[in-house]
Image 1: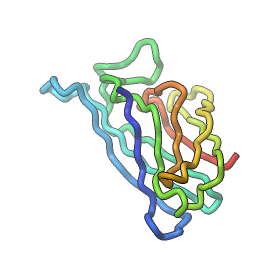
Image 2 (image 1 turned 30 degrees about the horizontal axis):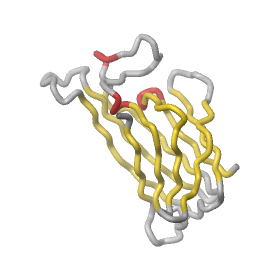
Image 3 (image 1 turned 180 degrees about the vertical axis):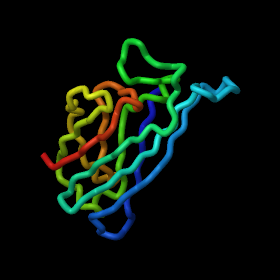
Image 4 (image 1 turned 135 degrees about the vertical axis):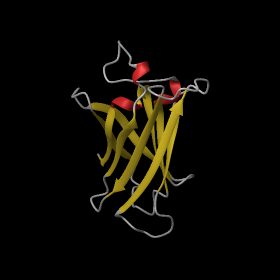
Length: 149
């Protein structure tokens, strides 16, 4: 299954400029030789005073043995190297509570930016939710931007 990325903002601060950092590692769970057989990513999420959010993805290790010949720039070991949804918690604290926000992806391989649809604020869970139309290979994505529409 593709992953759902959950990002926690600055809880309870009404703080607009915030950053959140994280690391994600994926392998096949079987191979003992890790050389070229796992992916590691560093994630940085940042909200600004303009109420825009940027999630930067930096591959720190690449599963070169899994290079996808059909999808340029993809090194998916399995479906856990794909993302299907993104959830940003404490949306009210960083003032992202309007109805909809436009989401786009920028890619490392120079492909045109892709419209990911709308991120929607859910007042019951106090989170901004982006559910992708179809899962995307994480190693291709350089940045996801969420902006007021």
